[in-house]
Length: 246
Length: 246
DNA sequence: ATTCAATTTATTGTATACAATGACATTGAA
DNA sequence: TTCAATGTCATTGTATACAATAAATTGAAT
Image (cartoon, rainbow over all chains, first blue to last red):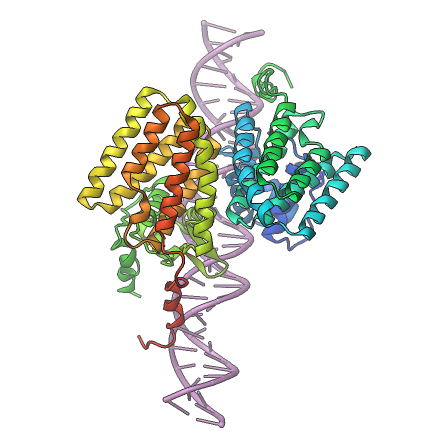
């Protein structure tokens, strides 16, 4: 109980989550945990014990619990009653559902967006695509994912529909988890070239073409995932928990 | 402070919300508040003070707050920092967004559903439509709204996509608030006949036709709303709060 | 009377104490 | 060695106390 106080939170700190003496706003803490999950510094099924998070961020369990519940609403964290929170571990079905939902929502988004997008917004999108390419060639997977998400979010923002935007935000987070879980080679992030074609279609003002480009893009990403094989090997951990003697 | 203990919660109790001595699960309380809002027993902008809810349901503020946050996440309740929770009062823009999102999501749902729906599920849908007609002729607005929501939810359930289902659940709740706010004559609930046509299209196996029926249905509902006129008169209440002398 | 400031009151935000639950280890017998 | 039962420990669930904030009220000065 003496030494444990140090080791407890070290495993989370070691993952890039840092807290200080005092004063971390709820949103900041939320953002830190969110980023750690999305950027795959916290793997699926990693337990998020309340006390450890309290130690790290120097806040009470009240606010930690609030944040965990928020993450649970967004399906990034799973809370099981009396058993605490853990980073969500999406099933194969979840993965399919997320992409299906993205097709529906981003289809609508891209149609609206291509009708109202301004030249400067088009330019901004192209800039993101360029940065994506830089990340890809440099092998910066984390940056690449972040930029890809940024691309899709910006599209949603130009569509002007905050409701669709918030749905997409959730779906993008879940997509990141799906990629972390089912795409070891990062092929499912979606190539910058495809994003480029999407921008071209929007620039031409043909919303059907743009919608089709988006659908093709999402189909392609989903196809890159290893969803056909065996079920989540992470369950093995639980399955063999009683067998392996420590 | 003696008599206030009674009056405090009476205004909420008077709206059909009832608590007992002890023991109300979180989900039950959530459901009671949710239903009261959806069935329009609690009007938009009605304040939901934590203490009063605690009195009514005999639980601590901890659990009441958790429930309020959940409702806020679903955009049925609005929480302003340090100022408490109130029944959400959707703006005109919100109303348009909700219907736009429903077109996107229910379009996808109806396509998938019409591909996999069974005869018994078709029959079940028809039964709901029949009940809707009964409610309409009898003038039972509450029952009608409930059944209409039930119809759309069941469709989503047969599609099998839980992600789209949960999005739709949120959108239906928000739709109910929009109807409460912008449709005094209840024309925007959508006529049972339109639901009937939708079922016919699905029965024929033509998913394009079914999707089109859904789109037409939603367009029709949205068109029935009074969204063009002046901005929310409910704000007047606040505007005149300092003028009218009690 | 009206306006503004100061004070009081009501309500929400946060921390913490205690209760309840589930996980784990130890024990004992088959 | 395996299994079940039991007790201990770690962790989460709930209530409550206190702090912080915003609203309401009071009172004086104009």
